[in-house]
Amino acid sequence: MIPILNDAMNASINVVLAVTPTPDPDFDPTTVTPGVVGFVVFFLIAVATLLLCLDVVRRIRRTTYRAEIKERLDAELAERDADQTAPSDKPD
Image 1 (cartoon, helix red, strand yellow):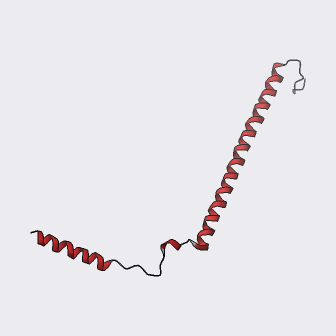
Image 2 (tube, helix red, strand yellow):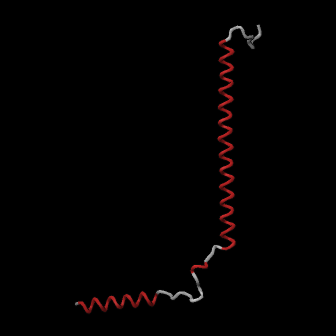
């Protein structure tokens, strides 16, 4: 029974070796580079990321400034309402 298994294993190994292509002798895997197209794609991704970061910073600053201005206006209105001697905007 063992010789049958040995023959089957040898046959399957021979099939795998017959199907597997041999590598090209001129091909050197250490010199593979993405080329100009890879550089251009990487550069465009970097530029898009930079622009998105700048846009996010701008939006965060705008939101912060609006909140600060709202707080100042609310403080001024509260101060004006607390001070009864201040002239009001309503006509008498």
